[in-house]
Length: 501
Image (cartoon, rainbow, N blue to C red):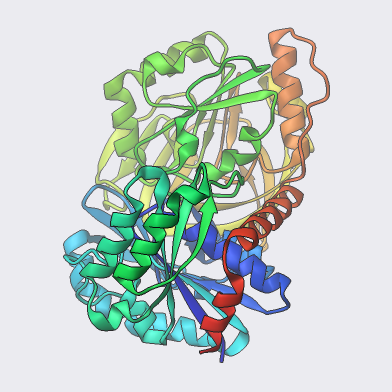
């Protein structure tokens, strides 16, 4: 049986995912076979495994940190919000259906056997399991039939480390208040407190830490500084969305920050390319005059297109396209670029809507989701991106709608489905407009280099060779940097003692 330890937080975005990844890497470096686990995840950023199953990206990132293959066993329940009041419920990588928050709250206890089954399989094959909680364990209105925080810890008898975020202020109140709201048997499970995202003179915390330990009876095992690591995130609290400036770079790329934006990890490699300014915009005034506009994936295509239509972004994008700005749509963003979108079955949001009409394409939503991993290459396209021809691509498809063309249009790529073995044309290109269903289409170094070259040529500026580090190589460096930093500030000796008890 594996030894388990659980990371819980005082709030969302306290740093649970990164600290879980750090412990996964540290334990792996120390010679253990490690797996991450999160019983229930809520996120719009998801991933398709080699089996064609869907899981949250945080557990994929943590599995990579642990040096193991991502599996839906590590995230048996995934909730993908379709609105403020409901989510698509995915169990063991497959869609169970859409539920309102109230329906899911009443239903979730029925999923406990699936959680136990997934955990038990990991338990049989790994030395260590690092479990991540969700939100806060002290959300007293939601504690009934808890399956993701203390309920999960009790299910597998795991000790807990509680993390607080000092960067937002009030960390002592966070940690003490969380402990105070827990039942005694739950408090007894917390074996250590961690203060995360600290900036400044560590000694200024000493008096507060002493008082906190006296009041809770729980030791503080570390004060982790605000870490500058570049790893995938999966929720709307990401700080990546804060970049709205396109100043001082060769190329300005604007990503439309849709209300239900999904898989924004598609743009991570563009974000860290120094010569490119990649920014997220929510209004026509923020859009400005970029060199390229990206319509990203979304979990609610119709609702997000309606949002763009109402706030003036659609009109601004249409005008930019008339001025020869490159427009690139991915998945839901690609669907918006067609002539018509129909969702009569209500798989996302019931209704029909005219699209932006860049492509003669009709998208119909049905209650079946395409999940596949693909590899292939770019075809010779129209417009300035002809330089991408024959560049290899590797990624995944994950969408409800299926698109058909009402008249002949040039495809963007030709790919093979790794799961079914089928080969097919994907996407479309017309003038300076491009669309694809493939997530991860920009992930390759050569793709970014050629994209940069093409846009500079279009702008009539001379550019030197853009420096892009291979995505996989970059990730491994980030995992090692993360582990090194956390080792320096966390009492790993005490954590190993906790694991032995």
